[in-house]
Length: 127
Length: 384
Image (cartoon, rainbow over all chains, first blue to last red; front, side):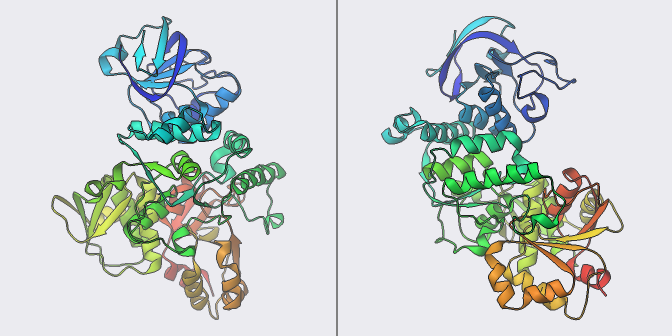
């Protein structure tokens, strides 16, 4: 599928899909990458070393620093796929050098949980 | 986005990881906001300075970045959490102080002018009309667009930081003259006019407007009301500028009822344990006004007054400082009402202020109740 590139890069790994929007500042433990927001559908799971798909980010723009901390603590996603590029996620991925792409609604809905994919955030493709 | 060869090289890391990081940020924000190119900016004003707002993650990021990063254009910075000169008088834990010192050192190492002020438009000379700048402090961005003839988006901490490192910004939103032309007019219908009314008008406008809004029936703004209007607007929404007079398109009235709704939302107490003045920080003119209003009077309770250290010498030389301190006012520099750890909910339950922006953050971040009152009434009722 074709996607819009927000932050360039390449990644290969399995997809972790979140149904709910993600609040990086309040919802994820920056030392472990584990989602600790009890009301989130990924509660208890780690976003580390996954290709993380979620609709968009919510909450404080300081959440961008949380994304950076995840990378620094080696528990960041390999790449991210969003429906809508919010500025917190975009800037967080940019400062952390994590590839970020935006998929259209139909393509996003066709993503499969745990599927191994190659995300090419240079030419804008998910294979 | 269309990048020049030089920008493309920097993005690919050919000029080092710091510039690659900065260009990645500008391109990501540009792609997300539908921009087609980068344009030069002359001045960046950064937010994300107070340890209370960026925490350990922000402190660490800035510390790593400052190892080899240097700002390329004039860069000024927002207030910190406290004033280093007076911090020993407050009950603040050493860890907070050390974390704040680390952030301060990182910014200064990268070449920031240590202004620690949210009113850069009052303490620095303003560049010529139409100059592009990158202001992350919302009241300053709105003031720059609406009064100073400058062009900026209501930047975030990262877009402004990337602009400081590169001297560039994505050309989107309010950098486009078509977007700057408002399609909504708010008609000011409230008769009593003071800085509190204008703060609430701004707060209302921020909620209902898009990128830009026209205000009609407003022609009597003094400096205090101007700043209050900008700060109120910056607090409640995404709106980044206003113009005066009616425009074509939709019109909404700001009347007594609408104002009452905003008042009810922000005012949660009939009185305050302490008073805070200065969100945005008070400049020399407002400090002079305050000193004159306080002649022969003294505060009945603690009153914290926040200002930039750039005016420290002038306010002393002009006798303002002596007068305010005689009246019991507590002057604090380099910090601001908003998110200051000096207003601690273990010590105070409620705060009286004339700032709508202050009211919002005192309630949501400091978790104290707020009593809104204009400055005239504060001086009449809270001093003897």
